[in-house]
Length: 62
Image (cartoon, rainbow, N blue to C red):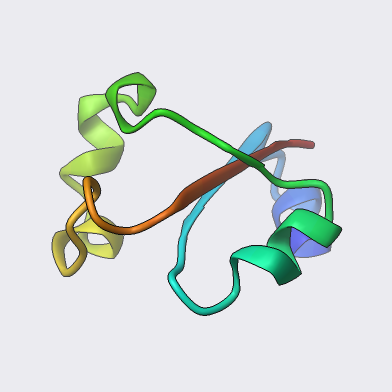
C-alpha cells in the first residue's frame, strides 16, 4: 500500500483502524487528531463507514 501510494505521487496517507494500529505504527504511522483531516477526505467513501471519533486514525508522510 505504501509503495503503491509513493508510485502514484501521494504525499500523505491516513488510515483508520481499530485492529491494526500497532501494525501501522511499526510502519511509521503516527496518531492524528481527526480535526486536522481535510473535509474532502472525510467526505470520501473510505471514511463514510467509520466514526472518526471512535476509530484510531494514523498518518504517514511519504
